[in-house]
Amino acid sequence: MAKKNEPTTTLAEEEVVTEEVVKEDDSQKEAGTTKNEVEAKIRKQIEKKQEKDTTFGIYRIGQYLKEEHKWENWLFLAISIITMVLGGLLLNGALIVRSDFPFFGEHPDVLGWILFGFAGVGLLYALYPFFKPAFPEFKKITWLSLPNFIGNSIRTFLFIGVFTGLFILYDSFITELLALIF
Image (tube, rainbow, N blue to C red):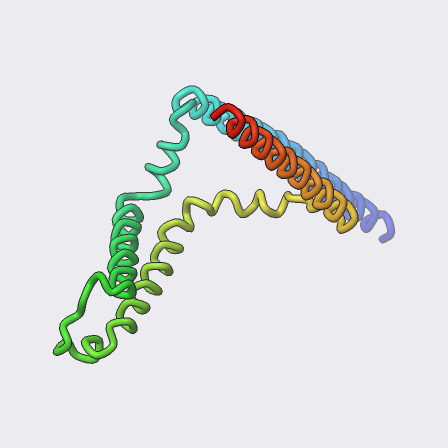
């Protein structure tokens, strides 16, 4: 009976080994396919970038504005500016609200501040997409240490002071010279 079990065990072992070899072959094929796919994707991305670079060149800003900032943002920006101007005119007193206008007729400054506030929020909302690409760049900034900052500030103020003194001396010299001439 021992002989009967041995071939069965050998066949089972062979089946397991065969399955492992098939799995390895499949994984190699998948790895090769994946590698080829990745290389193809990289080639496509490089081609797209080269195409963009040659197509747009100097006109990248225009392309960016066309894609990212549609006419709605421009309209919203214009409306916000007009609203801010109206709010400023109300606060300045150049624009008058009729006194029989509900609530705001008696308090035109409140209407001016409300218009000015909404316009400010609208301007921020309309201008945010313009400055959005700059935010990741802010994270890359490295600031000076405090001693370096103080040293540079002192040098700057000294430079300004010396040149201010020179200009004052030149001005007084030229004034005296002109007084002697005339």
